[in-house]
Length: 436
Image 1 (tube, rainbow, N blue to C red):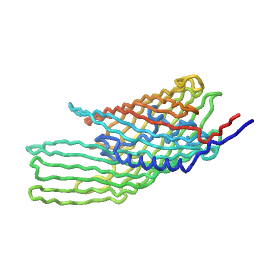
Image 2 (tube, rainbow, N blue to C red):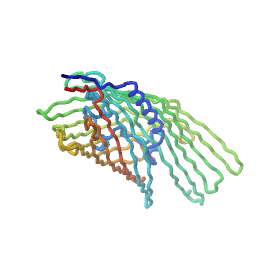
Image 3 (cartoon, rainbow, N blue to C red):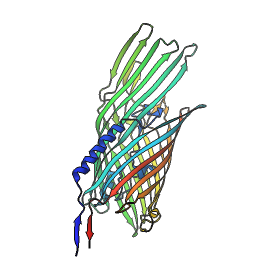
Image 4 (tube, one colour):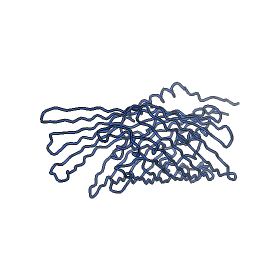
């Protein structure tokens, strides 16, 4: 005698939990995830926009597609989501950065929530994904002292900044043909950027403060495509490409100049503003991934961001205006690999552990005092450990360590060690249980 029953899922509870998680994470994103003085330039330090498995593989992902993981780097990958699963993925990170300038060294810590997202198959060959993750981070606090030529007067400047840009997105991936998938992400981006420079002379009488602020509220679109070509009976080669159009982001950056004289308790304030003065660049990325019998996969990505065509606000010669030449085109190259000892084994969970390694190289998107900003080199290693339960071992604990080196001639050198922890909950919520 056969009994066939359905494992029923309360979708209202799923949606309620998702909304609560997103609202909680939105408040967490309000805190900066960086402490770098380089985040004072442009829109701040740009986030890598990857999830747990991407971070352990050097940030690579344009060509990756797998039914039990979310890959927001290329929305075309959503079409590969398994029909019987509901995926939730969340992660956080902590980092220690060593700053070096001349003979001086300093260590600083930072960290916080990275991302949260979910994914499921809507209908056959159509998957959807939703979530929240950062676009950029601003966070720094330091001072510098300058002695005026031919004078005994010194100027002390305090620099501080906070904020960033976040994105709440929904995306879909469709597989119209056997080997071809296309997809998109549509995001609402928001955030506040705050930067302050306070300069005081050695007389401690006059103080000049410049306060730069901007509130962002706009959208961001990403489009992706993947083409998969089987090689023999067990291997696959996937080509991926992504495109994001640049546009204004609905911000009116302002500059407040405050000139205070403590001896007479008087200050003068002048406010400048530029209507719709900030924008994000057009971005183009291409990648390739090779899957060897589901045991080994390797990938390589290249990304170009057209910052050089964007004018950026600057206060110069008592004028606050948009200027060209402050930003420049940025290039990014990532490579990575993942190895699973025996993905078809039923004997040991250790046969299913994912071992990951990767590297990345990025050129700066801004100039500092007429010269290039710091170039970035990143190395990463990681593991994905299956979480055992009564049904399967499809949920994964993702742990990775990253080392990042940023440097430029006559500028601060940064060495950052970052630890990432993420969990991919991937359960067969929509499968049928059959009892004989």
